[in-house]
Image (tube, rainbow, N blue to C red; front, side, top):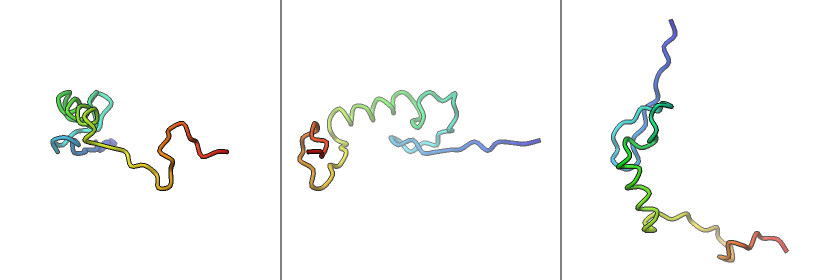
Length: 65
């Protein structure tokens, strides 16, 4: 009898424990609400991906040439 241990992670929005299963369509979030809150924060630019140091700031500049 082999039991698979189900991985549990914390919802990034509210911190509630979430089982990491294929059936959980909102993973890593606990609910659609938390998923939409996160999306709204990205849309409102409350989250940002840091730029690389020394980059030109131009997204079309791939560093060549």
